Length: 471
Ligand code: AMP
Ligand code: MG
Image 1 (tube, rainbow, N blue to C red):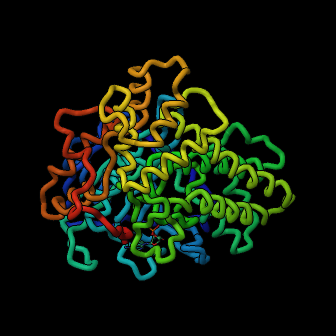
Image 2: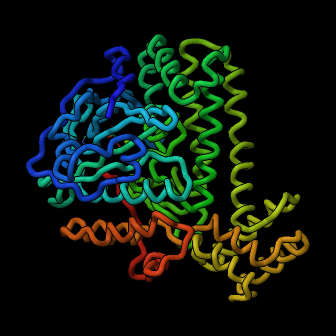
Image 3: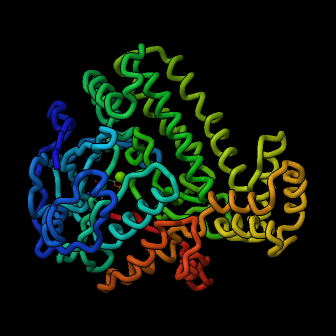
């Protein structure tokens, strides 16, 4: 393996060099062999070797560990300094297949100069959650950071209770956030904003490297990626839960799986996060919030100079792009061929039907497709009649439409109660639930012989009403 640490070549004010803390007895409980192979990390020895490397105990040859500086708007309030308080960037690896660069980051590896009053550690629960949900999102086709490895540390961390500690190795296109730009903009450091912009463009949008002016072109690209990303979240019933600007990656990947959740029954303004008192990051607020976050990126990019109108034009594209992506995805999920004027109305009617009848968001799409095979015909009432009129004469056979719908409507998602179950077992030392859930989530669209228990919505006593941040 070979590291090429371009972020560490940026000026010193971008990061702090650190050594990960040592942990008493690291043990690897998850290793992403496919991803390791993809990144050329498959020759790192046995599980014990990997546990050493991915707990921070043993330095990886060529790694240059740093904690990144960033700021962020948290729930609308600006915090001028956040930074990697419980994470360390080991370095960047290049994927041989296409030359793409990826960050390798340890999360939960001890204190850094950005830890403030935190211990820099992670308990096992958030490690299990991020591993399961980020890998599931990847298999669902959503741009996301990924999980390479997970270890238990043999250490006890103090949270609401004494909990086992863990470290997750996260793989990301980069860890550059909207909040990274805000960090330098807040310090009136126009030179740093410019350097970060050039770095981010070289890394994520090399095709616009020669654009003049560069900043609005970059903003435009981030607008496009975020619009597409949030549309995918919404189509899957995913709620990020903490869409602070420090959790918004300019690469367009989903990052930070804290109080995130998937809808079971459809509720358009659903909130799970215990700290989201006013529903700022509710399911149906996510597009508006992404746009707000992009406006904070625009503010920061304006510091080195530029025409305000250019930035406004790029920001102004968000709503239209989001709606187009979302409607396209929903057409596919509902098996609608082509484009008709009232498709938006049909989507709305579907969501209204789900909400009025407290139906499961994910499974209802599969159930709707099953009516094409005669199973449960008529169960979706007036909506179903309208839907049948829409699909009546497009020449697509029922069997073909059903197959097309099933190919985009997952049967298995990391439901909140399943993730909780995996966490509870893991904290008790039993990783079998984690492993079987993880395996099923690797093929979310394909019915699996032993998958039934993982497809069902929660029983009333299993419903998760509230989720918590990983801290
Ligand atoms: P998050 O809510 O995970 O996006 O984290 C927000 C900020 O809090 C980031 O700057 C984190 O590095 C920091 N943070 C969260 N948990 C800890 C912890 N246990 N120790 C130190 N810093 C933390
Ligand atoms: Mg974060």
